[in-house]
Image 1 (cartoon, rainbow, N blue to C red):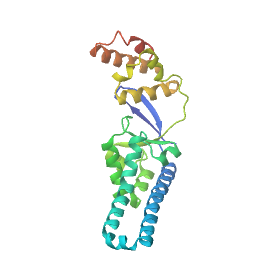
Image 2 (cartoon, rainbow, N blue to C red):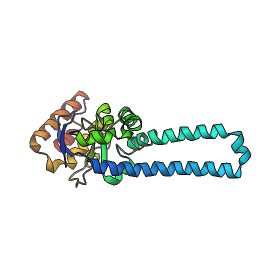
Image 3 (tube, rainbow, N blue to C red):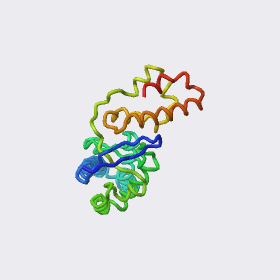
Image 4 (cartoon, helix red, strand yellow):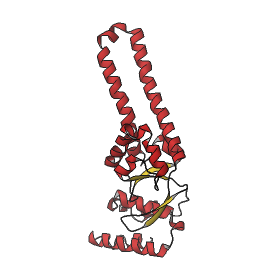
Amino acid sequence: MKKIKITTPENIEVEYNLAGLGSRTAAAVIDGLIQGIIMLMVVIAIIIISAYSPDFWKKYYGWIIGVTIIINSLVNYCYFIVMELTMNGMTIGKKAMKLRTIRNNGQPITLKHSAIRNLFRVFIDVFGIGTILIFFSKENKRLGDYAASTIVIVEENLTQPIGIEVFSDINKNIRYYLTDEEYETLKYYYMRKNKIEDISKVQMKLKEYYTKKFKDLEIYDEYRNFIDAL
């Protein structure tokens, strides 16, 4: 399995396993089946309307077909965007295969990244170009990943030695001062703490980063325990 090392904005080096062609294809098949079921329900609804309400069908035939086309477009494109944004980079298929989409710097994807990568999925990668690029790419990227600066990783089932929840016990307001990116970085740091090489160097960088951050916010004394626990 290919691996990739990413340096986060906080200068923490994190190693991930890249999702391979097989697992990504399996995830895409699962998502495709779900999309197919949704569209099958729409088709069944149309059949029922045409069979039991012929007058309504004749009167609004054009509207029904138009709405069906719109629904099909939304299912093909927006399904992945909605899933990735609400499931932190996952879709139902990716969750089943334990995969996650993240940005090149290890941060969670945003609407912009998801919209770009899935636009390429619908119009270009669907013709097999994505599969070919994943096969030959060193980072297992399809064209949409290159355009959106994203990668797909394997979500490891690691035991978390100490979680961000511990800091909630120190002060319930600490989450307020952490950006989403900082929170995610800390979460992955604690999940992989036992696997990070030269952990003392990473801890020092983290302490320097949050010492400066909290001093700039003038809350250093209040959250010194947070920094000492890193």
